Length: 291
Picture 1 (cartoon, rainbow, N blue to C red):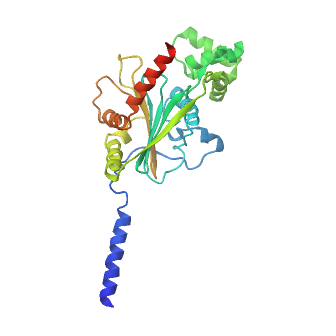
Picture 2: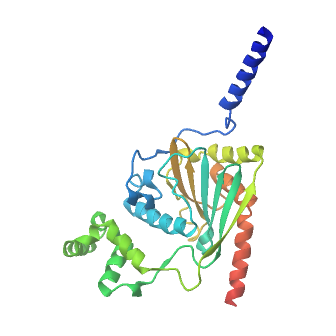
C-alpha cells in the first residue's frame, strides 16, 4: 500500500511539473501596453486601442483608419482589446506600396497566411463622391490634420483658424473619418484573398516566437521610421503582439541593408512563409495584365 502511494505521489508530481512548464519554452519579455479595462461597442473598430493616445494624433487617425479598412477586408479580429490565451504575433507585409498586401499570423503552432489575390484590400479616395465643400474639407484634413495644432506659416495658420471657426466640424476626427469613408472606393475589380496555413513542429514554432521576442520588439516604439534620405517607397511592416497581459504594436520601415535584429527576424518569417516569392509572382501577373 505504501509503495502504491509513493508511485501515485511521483506521478502526481510529474504531471504537475508538465502542466507548470507548458509553454515555458516560449520567452515573453517585459514591455508592451495594457489592454483596456473596458471599452464601448464603437471601440471594436479601433484596432490600436492601447496606443491610440500615445502616438501623435495624425498617426493615430491614419493607423486607426488603415487598420479598420484592412482588417475588415481580410476578416481579421481585433487583437488590441482583450488578452489572448497564448502569445500571438500578426504581421502586415506591404512591400514598397505596390498594392500587394499580406497578413501573417503566428499562433497555435502554425503560420496563418492571407494574401491579396485580386482587387484592392484598401480603398483609394475618389473626391468626386463628395460635394465641393466636402472636397475642400477633406483636402484640409489630409494636409493639415489636426488643424488646431498647426504651427507653420502664419498666413496658413490664420486661414485654418478662420476655417475652423466657420466650420467647427473641422476639429472633429469623426468628421474626417466620415468624409474618408464617403470618398472611399475599391475600384471595379472585386477584392479577394487566398488563405493558407503552414504547420510548425514545436521546435520550429518556439524558434520563430522567440526570434521575435528576443529581437527587441517589445521595447520598440510604436513608430520606427529611421531611414531618412533613402528610397521614397521602402518596404515596411506592422507587427502586433498580444499575450495574456500585454499588447504591442510596431510600424517599421526597413532601411537599406538593415542589419537590426528585428529586421532579420521579420525577414526570416517572410522567407519561410514564401511571402516575398509570392509577391514577385503577383507582380509578374499584374504586369502581364497591363500589357
